[in-house]
Image (cartoon, rainbow, N blue to C red; front, side):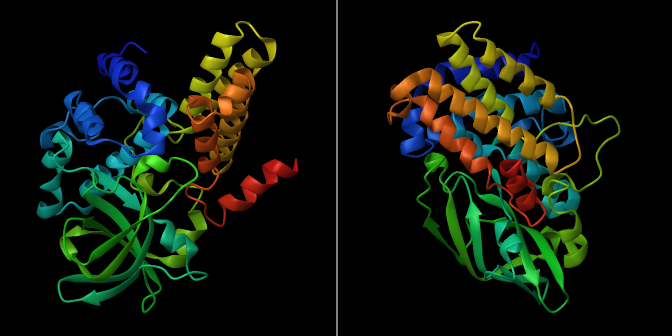
Length: 344
């Protein structure tokens, strides 16, 4: 890709991020990585220019995120939801929410997201929302949020049982009323992923982004990516969710470097590139690409041989990250589609 932002980012990935990917997977994303991303303007690329951003075309941002996922899945997971936070501040549209945008553009504040608790409800306890003077009181768990200690602003969802609605809002993670517990993950361990417990945490009305009927939301969950439910600009291209394409490309690039021209690897690469630009109805496109990531990272392991399973090898980092994609944003619509791929 010839876009200057992509070229500069690719150089950063090659020189700074990729060489430490295995170490980061076993430990945590260092703050120096965030500083490096800030220096190349990564956090400004989804913020409108009038709020201090330096927006780049969506297809370029998608390519950037995929490159990062392929090089260092843990760092990617820690920062990739920043754009969702920008979108939600714009959706809220209130002066306090919009005031966040210049800080999000510079990376002074970094955005994240925590939604899995509403998907688990009512089978498991969720973050609960209760109307309070001037906003909503949130109590309970945010089951999964990545980038803890780096991310300080998060889009979170809660259940209001009284009105049968989901309540979504922007949370300042630096405020009191939040306790974090580090999750020991078998994949993307370095992503600083935690579970939060909120106790009497009030989100002011100015930072509430949506109150949606539960049935209405659930009917499309899995067909529509949560951060893109707001109206898209005319001409916005259909782009795959960041992650699987980048992981698969990186794994296949290494495999083909070891075995140039290997016919099966070439066919798998062609299948990946074709699927990446051929949208199908969700959640099937996401399921298809995530399955390709599993196949490609497995091929990367095979090309590496037994060394690929050593803890110091990037092949096993990518293969485990591909397994993580199988449970990312797992709704009741997505789960059957994922299981079906293994039965056919």
